[in-house]
Length: 311
Image (cartoon, rainbow, N blue to C red; front, side, top):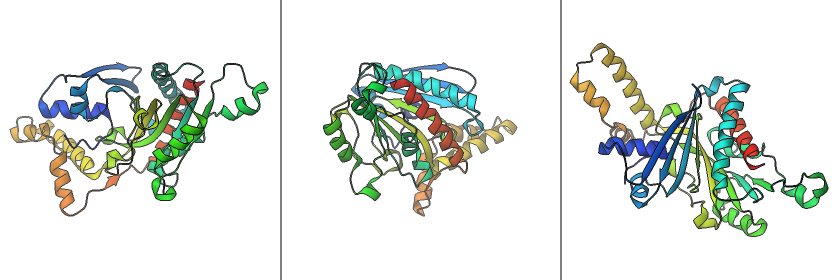
Protein backbone atom coordinates (compact mmCIF):
# COMPACT_ATOMS: atom_id res chain seq x y z
CA UNK A 1 0.00 0.00 0.00
CA UNK A 2 1.27 3.46 -0.88
CA UNK A 3 1.74 6.05 1.85
CA UNK A 4 -0.63 8.49 0.18
CA UNK A 5 -0.92 10.83 3.19
CA UNK A 6 -3.93 12.44 1.56
CA UNK A 7 -7.67 11.97 2.05
CA UNK A 8 -8.53 12.97 -1.53
CA UNK A 9 -9.37 10.13 -3.92
CA UNK A 10 -8.37 12.31 -6.88
CA UNK A 11 -4.87 12.83 -5.48
CA UNK A 12 -4.52 9.16 -4.67
CA UNK A 13 -5.43 8.33 -8.27
CA UNK A 14 -2.81 10.74 -9.61
CA UNK A 15 -0.11 9.41 -7.24
CA UNK A 16 -0.86 5.78 -8.17
CA UNK A 17 -0.86 6.52 -11.90
CA UNK A 18 2.41 8.43 -11.69
CA UNK A 19 4.14 5.76 -9.60
CA UNK A 20 3.02 2.94 -11.93
CA UNK A 21 3.24 4.92 -15.18
CA UNK A 22 -0.41 4.19 -15.99
CA UNK A 23 -2.95 6.15 -18.00
CA UNK A 24 -5.87 4.22 -16.51
CA UNK A 25 -6.51 2.12 -13.40
CA UNK A 26 -8.69 -0.98 -13.45
CA UNK A 27 -11.77 -0.32 -11.35
CA UNK A 28 -11.40 3.47 -11.39
CA UNK A 29 -13.48 5.73 -13.64
CA UNK A 30 -12.76 9.46 -13.96
CA UNK A 31 -14.29 12.51 -15.57
CA UNK A 32 -13.72 16.25 -15.34
CA UNK A 33 -15.77 19.34 -16.12
CA UNK A 34 -15.11 23.05 -15.80
CA UNK A 35 -17.83 25.37 -14.51
CA UNK A 36 -15.85 28.57 -15.09
CA UNK A 37 -12.27 29.83 -14.76
CA UNK A 38 -12.41 29.40 -10.96
CA UNK A 39 -14.42 26.20 -10.44
CA UNK A 40 -13.60 22.71 -11.68
CA UNK A 41 -15.31 19.39 -10.88
CA UNK A 42 -13.49 16.05 -10.94
CA UNK A 43 -15.33 12.77 -10.38
CA UNK A 44 -13.63 9.53 -9.37
CA UNK A 45 -15.75 6.37 -9.20
CA UNK A 46 -14.24 3.23 -7.70
CA UNK A 47 -16.14 0.28 -9.16
CA UNK A 48 -14.39 -2.89 -7.98
CA UNK A 49 -11.86 -4.42 -5.57
CA UNK A 50 -8.93 -3.65 -7.88
CA UNK A 51 -9.70 0.06 -7.76
CA UNK A 52 -10.33 -0.14 -4.03
CA UNK A 53 -6.94 -1.76 -3.39
CA UNK A 54 -5.10 0.59 -5.75
CA UNK A 55 -6.35 3.80 -4.13
CA UNK A 56 -6.96 2.56 -0.61
CA UNK A 57 -10.50 3.91 -0.79
CA UNK A 58 -13.84 2.11 -0.58
CA UNK A 59 -15.97 1.37 -3.64
CA UNK A 60 -18.17 4.40 -4.30
CA UNK A 61 -18.34 7.94 -5.67
CA UNK A 62 -15.83 10.72 -4.96
CA UNK A 63 -16.54 14.22 -6.27
CA UNK A 64 -13.85 16.88 -5.98
CA UNK A 65 -14.83 20.54 -6.40
CA UNK A 66 -11.85 22.89 -6.78
CA UNK A 67 -12.46 26.59 -6.10
CA UNK A 68 -9.63 28.97 -7.00
CA UNK A 69 -8.88 32.33 -5.37
CA UNK A 70 -11.09 31.58 -2.37
CA UNK A 71 -9.15 33.82 0.01
CA UNK A 72 -10.11 36.86 -2.10
CA UNK A 73 -13.57 35.58 -3.02
CA UNK A 74 -16.45 38.03 -3.16
CA UNK A 75 -20.03 37.23 -2.16
CA UNK A 76 -20.89 36.41 -5.78
CA UNK A 77 -18.03 33.89 -5.98
CA UNK A 78 -19.06 32.22 -2.72
CA UNK A 79 -22.66 31.94 -3.88
CA UNK A 80 -21.62 30.42 -7.22
CA UNK A 81 -19.45 27.83 -5.49
CA UNK A 82 -22.24 26.96 -3.04
CA UNK A 83 -24.63 26.35 -5.95
CA UNK A 84 -22.17 23.89 -7.45
CA UNK A 85 -21.92 22.10 -4.08
CA UNK A 86 -25.74 22.01 -3.88
CA UNK A 87 -26.07 20.39 -7.30
CA UNK A 88 -23.42 17.74 -6.68
CA UNK A 89 -24.61 16.94 -3.15
CA UNK A 90 -28.21 16.69 -4.32
CA UNK A 91 -27.24 14.10 -6.94
CA UNK A 92 -25.44 12.02 -4.32
CA UNK A 93 -28.42 12.20 -1.95
CA UNK A 94 -30.77 10.99 -4.69
CA UNK A 95 -28.80 7.74 -4.86
CA UNK A 96 -29.51 6.92 -1.22
CA UNK A 97 -32.70 8.57 0.13
CA UNK A 98 -35.99 10.02 -1.06
CA UNK A 99 -37.01 13.68 -0.78
CA UNK A 100 -38.62 13.16 2.63
CA UNK A 101 -35.86 11.07 4.20
CA UNK A 102 -34.65 12.59 7.48
CA UNK A 103 -31.05 13.84 7.45
CA UNK A 104 -28.60 14.30 10.32
CA UNK A 105 -25.75 16.74 9.65
CA UNK A 106 -22.59 16.15 11.71
CA UNK A 107 -19.76 18.66 12.01
CA UNK A 108 -16.54 16.97 13.10
CA UNK A 109 -13.57 18.83 14.54
CA UNK A 110 -12.41 21.13 17.31
CA UNK A 111 -14.00 24.58 17.33
CA UNK A 112 -10.97 25.97 19.20
CA UNK A 113 -8.40 24.91 16.56
CA UNK A 114 -8.91 26.99 13.42
CA UNK A 115 -7.83 24.42 10.77
CA UNK A 116 -10.08 21.85 12.47
CA UNK A 117 -13.03 24.17 13.17
CA UNK A 118 -14.84 23.93 9.83
CA UNK A 119 -17.29 21.19 10.88
CA UNK A 120 -18.59 22.93 14.03
CA UNK A 121 -18.74 26.29 12.19
CA UNK A 122 -20.88 24.77 9.43
CA UNK A 123 -23.27 23.27 12.00
CA UNK A 124 -24.02 26.77 13.32
CA UNK A 125 -25.30 27.72 9.86
CA UNK A 126 -27.47 24.66 9.13
CA UNK A 127 -31.23 25.21 8.82
CA UNK A 128 -32.52 22.60 11.28
CA UNK A 129 -36.20 21.65 10.96
CA UNK A 130 -36.75 18.44 12.92
CA UNK A 131 -37.88 20.22 16.10
CA UNK A 132 -40.28 22.45 14.17
CA UNK A 133 -41.85 19.48 12.38
CA UNK A 134 -42.23 17.62 15.69
CA UNK A 135 -43.49 20.45 17.90
CA UNK A 136 -44.84 23.21 15.62
CA UNK A 137 -46.04 21.40 12.48
CA UNK A 138 -48.64 24.10 11.77
CA UNK A 139 -45.85 26.55 10.97
CA UNK A 140 -43.93 24.23 8.66
CA UNK A 141 -44.55 23.99 4.94
CA UNK A 142 -45.89 20.58 3.92
CA UNK A 143 -43.18 18.33 2.50
CA UNK A 144 -40.33 19.93 4.46
CA UNK A 145 -37.55 17.45 5.17
CA UNK A 146 -36.60 16.85 8.81
CA UNK A 147 -33.02 18.02 9.34
CA UNK A 148 -31.08 17.85 12.60
CA UNK A 149 -27.46 18.78 13.31
CA UNK A 150 -24.75 18.19 15.87
CA UNK A 151 -21.09 19.01 16.50
CA UNK A 152 -20.01 16.12 18.76
CA UNK A 153 -16.56 17.50 19.61
CA UNK A 154 -13.34 15.49 19.59
CA UNK A 155 -12.11 12.50 21.57
CA UNK A 156 -9.60 14.62 23.47
CA UNK A 157 -12.33 16.78 25.03
CA UNK A 158 -15.22 14.30 25.30
CA UNK A 159 -13.44 11.02 25.99
CA UNK A 160 -15.91 9.37 23.62
CA UNK A 161 -15.27 8.17 20.08
CA UNK A 162 -17.42 10.14 17.62
CA UNK A 163 -18.86 6.98 16.12
CA UNK A 164 -20.06 5.93 19.60
CA UNK A 165 -21.90 9.24 20.00
CA UNK A 166 -23.45 8.91 16.56
CA UNK A 167 -24.60 5.34 17.20
CA UNK A 168 -26.63 6.59 20.16
CA UNK A 169 -28.14 9.43 18.13
CA UNK A 170 -28.99 7.17 15.19
CA UNK A 171 -30.61 4.66 17.52
CA UNK A 172 -32.84 7.34 19.06
CA UNK A 173 -33.82 9.72 16.26
CA UNK A 174 -33.48 7.22 13.38
CA UNK A 175 -32.34 9.47 10.49
CA UNK A 176 -32.26 7.95 7.01
CA UNK A 177 -28.86 9.43 6.12
CA UNK A 178 -25.94 11.26 7.72
CA UNK A 179 -23.92 14.09 6.18
CA UNK A 180 -20.52 14.43 7.84
CA UNK A 181 -18.28 17.51 7.45
CA UNK A 182 -14.62 17.23 8.38
CA UNK A 183 -11.21 18.76 7.73
CA UNK A 184 -8.90 16.70 5.53
CA UNK A 185 -5.22 16.49 4.67
CA UNK A 186 -3.95 17.05 1.13
CA UNK A 187 -0.79 16.39 -0.85
CA UNK A 188 -0.99 19.81 -2.53
CA UNK A 189 -0.65 23.25 -1.00
CA UNK A 190 -2.95 24.60 -3.74
CA UNK A 191 -5.88 22.62 -2.35
CA UNK A 192 -5.82 24.04 1.18
CA UNK A 193 -9.36 25.24 1.94
CA UNK A 194 -10.07 25.54 -1.77
CA UNK A 195 -11.24 21.97 -2.44
CA UNK A 196 -14.36 20.08 -1.37
CA UNK A 197 -14.58 16.30 -1.63
CA UNK A 198 -18.06 14.79 -1.52
CA UNK A 199 -18.24 11.02 -1.08
CA UNK A 200 -20.89 8.41 -0.33
CA UNK A 201 -18.49 5.99 1.38
CA UNK A 202 -18.25 7.63 4.80
CA UNK A 203 -15.07 8.92 6.42
CA UNK A 204 -12.23 7.88 8.72
CA UNK A 205 -11.50 10.96 10.89
CA UNK A 206 -7.81 11.82 11.26
CA UNK A 207 -6.61 9.33 8.64
CA UNK A 208 -4.85 11.97 6.55
CA UNK A 209 -2.65 13.15 9.43
CA UNK A 210 -1.88 9.76 10.95
CA UNK A 211 -4.38 10.11 13.82
CA UNK A 212 -6.91 7.57 12.61
CA UNK A 213 -10.16 7.28 14.56
CA UNK A 214 -13.01 4.81 14.16
CA UNK A 215 -14.72 4.78 10.78
CA UNK A 216 -17.98 6.66 10.30
CA UNK A 217 -19.80 4.83 7.53
CA UNK A 218 -22.85 2.77 6.63
CA UNK A 219 -20.92 -0.26 7.83
CA UNK A 220 -20.54 1.16 11.35
CA UNK A 221 -23.86 3.04 11.64
CA UNK A 222 -26.27 1.03 9.50
CA UNK A 223 -27.43 3.98 7.34
CA UNK A 224 -25.82 5.77 4.36
CA UNK A 225 -23.11 8.29 5.22
CA UNK A 226 -22.19 11.12 2.84
CA UNK A 227 -18.96 12.88 3.74
CA UNK A 228 -17.92 16.40 2.83
CA UNK A 229 -14.23 16.95 3.43
CA UNK A 230 -12.13 20.08 2.95
CA UNK A 231 -8.30 19.99 3.10
CA UNK A 232 -7.05 22.48 5.68
CA UNK A 233 -3.55 21.14 6.32
CA UNK A 234 -0.56 19.58 4.58
CA UNK A 235 2.54 17.86 5.92
CA UNK A 236 5.77 19.86 5.98
CA UNK A 237 7.23 17.16 3.73
CA UNK A 238 4.56 18.00 1.15
CA UNK A 239 5.30 21.69 1.45
CA UNK A 240 9.03 21.14 0.92
CA UNK A 241 8.42 18.71 -1.96
CA UNK A 242 6.12 21.21 -3.70
CA UNK A 243 8.68 23.95 -3.07
CA UNK A 244 11.38 21.88 -4.75
CA UNK A 245 9.10 21.42 -7.77
CA UNK A 246 8.61 25.17 -8.03
CA UNK A 247 12.36 25.73 -7.69
CA UNK A 248 13.16 23.14 -10.37
CA UNK A 249 10.52 24.59 -12.68
CA UNK A 250 12.15 28.01 -12.46
CA UNK A 251 15.59 26.53 -13.09
CA UNK A 252 14.34 24.57 -16.08
CA UNK A 253 13.18 27.74 -17.75
CA UNK A 254 16.83 28.75 -17.81
CA UNK A 255 18.29 25.29 -18.42
CA UNK A 256 15.75 23.10 -20.22
CA UNK A 257 18.44 20.72 -21.43
CA UNK A 258 19.62 19.77 -17.95
CA UNK A 259 18.72 16.07 -17.76
CA UNK A 260 19.31 15.85 -14.02
CA UNK A 261 16.75 18.51 -13.23
CA UNK A 262 14.24 16.98 -15.62
CA UNK A 263 14.67 13.58 -13.99
CA UNK A 264 14.47 14.99 -10.47
CA UNK A 265 11.17 16.72 -11.14
CA UNK A 266 9.61 13.54 -12.53
CA UNK A 267 10.32 11.61 -9.34
CA UNK A 268 8.04 11.63 -6.31
CA UNK A 269 10.21 13.40 -3.76
CA UNK A 270 7.66 13.19 -0.97
CA UNK A 271 8.99 10.01 0.64
CA UNK A 272 12.62 11.21 0.42
CA UNK A 273 11.78 14.56 1.99
CA UNK A 274 9.60 12.96 4.67
CA UNK A 275 12.36 10.51 5.62
CA UNK A 276 14.88 13.34 5.91
CA UNK A 277 12.56 15.42 8.10
CA UNK A 278 11.60 12.49 10.33
CA UNK A 279 15.24 11.81 11.20
CA UNK A 280 15.20 14.95 13.31
CA UNK A 281 11.47 14.72 14.03
CA UNK A 282 10.97 17.92 12.09
CA UNK A 283 7.97 16.83 10.03
CA UNK A 284 4.90 18.86 10.98
CA UNK A 285 1.34 19.49 9.89
CA UNK A 286 1.07 23.06 8.56
CA UNK A 287 -1.66 25.43 7.47
CA UNK A 288 -1.55 28.82 5.68
CA UNK A 289 -1.58 32.14 7.52
CA UNK A 290 -4.87 33.07 5.81
CA UNK A 291 -6.63 30.02 7.28
CA UNK A 292 -9.13 32.15 9.25
CA UNK A 293 -10.49 33.83 6.13
CA UNK A 294 -10.38 30.59 4.14
CA UNK A 295 -12.35 28.71 6.79
CA UNK A 296 -14.99 31.46 6.97
CA UNK A 297 -15.48 31.46 3.20
CA UNK A 298 -15.54 27.68 2.96
CA UNK A 299 -17.96 27.50 5.90
CA UNK A 300 -20.41 29.68 3.95
CA UNK A 301 -20.02 27.61 0.79
CA UNK A 302 -20.54 24.26 2.52
CA UNK A 303 -23.43 25.38 4.77
CA UNK A 304 -25.34 26.98 1.92
CA UNK A 305 -24.68 23.96 -0.27
CA UNK A 306 -26.13 21.61 2.33
CA UNK A 307 -29.12 23.81 3.18
CA UNK A 308 -30.29 24.02 -0.41
CA UNK A 309 -29.50 20.39 -1.21
CA UNK A 310 -31.55 18.91 1.65
CA UNK A 311 -34.53 21.30 1.48
